[in-house]
Image (tube, rainbow, N blue to C red; front, side, top):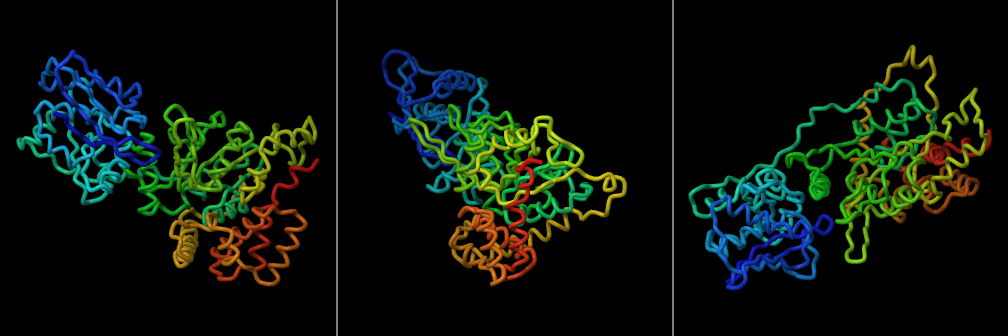
Length: 510
């Protein structure tokens, strides 16, 4: 007799169906697992044996063969423990074999028979629901899996004994409830920033349109403080975005207690991060910081200190909204619809261009430092601003500053305008001007006559690339949305162009 149990193998954030086939037959006493298992799957043999023994089930002195079909698909992870154990229990008659046919099973086993949480419960539940099956998962992963839908049947036992008793009818496992993580820590407020009104304005524009932002200024000018306060003016995740973000974090094993949060991700990797850490990769092609920041912010402080190869790897996700990891034996795509925010000093000593300061190495200090950022990557940054040092007057007698809550209301209003515009146009996946196609932005951001003349003159004088030209239009469209204006005017284009060329003084010798 062959017992069959359904489970999944993860490719990106998708769960590929896998069938666990277990056969107990006469022969040499051995347990074999076949079907391209990795080390974690191969070691499940010892965990399954120990867990079944702790649960009071004696294994027969026979040959046990476990096949993971399809056999040519690599199987990775410890979540195959529970389906293998249940398949073996069904083959031995400890639980009804037909009871497992309506479920997809994932879970890792401890040696005492309890079931440990695993990564990927949410995408596994969504995949199971898509094929009309329920899900059996660890108790700690139940709240996460419950987000797949109210109709999906979910069993979240704490041990093999509890699951066996459920199928025998001596114990009833209740369906877990989805839960939201309480955001007890309040976000830092923009009112804490003294001075830097032009930088706050640029931050508001970037938040309203989802634009990439680069801040250039000396040490201590407040660049990191400004970036840390960007989440406080961003709108919460929508229901669809919440599920997308949570699926990525679930596969990466970063959902705390299976609870979801509607706050947009804000990832701040150290500048020593490798290319695989930023865009994903490694032995099992895990999502990187760019994918973990999906529908949120990726903040890169000390921008030129990152390796040039790692920075240039971000060019594809910034353009397409996904990270594609290609290897010799597989190809994985992770969503990465991110807003890049970067901060840097003008030169290695940090004070180039500041009044009263000069670099010991002269202009070469600036050019060598800024040349670490490639032109194609810089071309993908919509807004570039100078963040000068804060004056003593601003520190001693600061002007009243606007709170994040007030700015967030304007940002939410501008984003609602964009959602309605793109929803009426058809493609519902577009939510911000930054993600709008070139053809659409030429339609929706068509300037008036004086604005068109200004844009033409600026494009010729500044030698804008085609990408730069369209990104100026996108920023101008966002500025018009913030003003509640249907038409993109000359004043909007002038401000958008100023964001495109800000920082030019730093690239020329002082």
